[in-house]
Structure formats: structure tokens, C-alpha cells
Image (cartoon, rainbow, N blue to C red):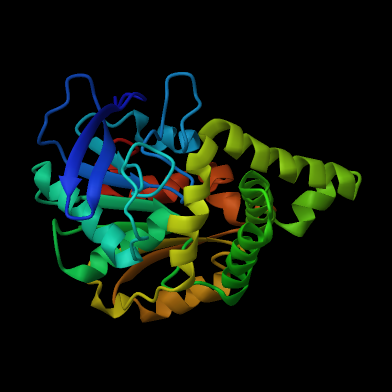
Length: 308
């Protein structure tokens, strides 16, 4: 059983010192097959925790019963975890190279699976296209595409404008995060969940305040080192030779289904495409794990052996 507790480690790369976490069975082999799991820009390598408060806790059940496997996840350089913050923001390609280099230094010579949600999915596509570092046998991309949608780029641009025009940096972070949360969800969900716009506004601002309270000045890095780079990337996915599984969400405005379908057409080997109806928008990659867990378990051989 893969334990919901990760052992932390640090690796120095050409791009900065990376903090990561390794999840394995208590008697797991150090050379057991490796699956990399990466989440969104606000995520950390602490995917799962005993108290259920891990960043991507809902994904744990997909891996829990697997014996001969180790899951590795990294804090993002310039993100909210323990990795260092480069003086200048890295590109998407540099991020992918940093984590591939970290895996090499850990002695990983093959990535049996890469499961990426949101930014983690973008990085998976980039890593698989580079032909550098450990090869990736199978890639699952959840709520992500090979380039940004126009609407998501506009929303991120408005976040930058908020930060630049707020007299108080902390207030800028709160408003930028609130706008981000608005873009992650769907209009139908807001109608269903809130009786009045003021209630919805209070919820969004509370999410911004929560980010600030948890991470202090570090929260600003999301909008200086990670968010902007997602406005300027384009991955040549025709270079990807491994099989790819795509998961999209009907109400996602960050990685809309039309853009994911475009990605599907460009990929040399799109093994499966799972489309999910959900009111949760982009957050479907966290909220709707139960709807794609079976497909994911069947797609990754290391999980399929356990879920026959």
C-alpha cells in the first residue's frame, strides 16, 4: 500500500534547489517503478497527508492499494513550497528540465507514468516533448493543453494589472487570487451554490485572504513567478512519442474542451480521451477525481495490476 505520507528530500538543479516528496509502501523497494504526480501552480509536493489535508488528497485512492510503486512530486521553483525562487521567472521548458534533472539526480532512469493536473499537465507535455532526462512511458494530462486559451490569458493579465495598480501589495494578492478562483469555477456552480452575489464575492475574497494567511509574502510569488509564464508557452506536442491520456471538463475555461480536442488531434499517440460533465469548471481535476479514477487506473499499468 502506498502510504499517504511522503518523505521529503532536496535536489540541487541548474535552475535552483528543488524540494520533493516520495510516497511508497512502508516496505517499498528504492528502485520501484516511479510515477510523477504534479498539480496546479498553487500546489506543493505534499499531495497526501494522514489528516486528509493534502493538496491533491482526492487522488490518493487511485494509488493507495498499489504495492510496488513510488510516487514522486515536487514543489515548484518559485511556488508556495520549499523549492527556491529563481531571481527571474523560469519558462515552462526550464521548469520541466529542472524536475527531469532532479529525477536523474535521484537515480530515476525511467518515468513509468506522469500524471499532471493543470500546470502539472502542461509540464508533463513539455517534459515528454523534450527528449531529455528519464523517458516517460505514459502521460496523463488532466485539465491542461499545449497552449493557453485566450480567455485564461486575459484573466491572468487582469491579475497582473490588479497587482500593479493596488497601492497595497497584500490587497493585490487577495484580489488576484479571488479572480483566479472565479476563473476556476463555472457560472452554473455559482448559481447553485450562492443565493446572492454578495455571498459569492465574500467567498472569493475569503479564498484570497486564506492564501495570504497561509503563505504570507510567499503568496506573491504565484503572480510574479508562475502565473505569468502560462501566458506565453506553446509546446510542440508532435515530438511526443509516448502514449497520452487526456482528461477534459465540460465547463473548464482554463483548458476548454475545444483546446483539448485540438491537442488530441496534434498528438502522435493519444491513447484515450476522457470528457467529463461537471459544474466545477477547471477545478474538476480535483473535484471530479472519482469520474476519471477508473480510466486512470486502467491506463497506468502499475495501477491496473491492482485494480483488476
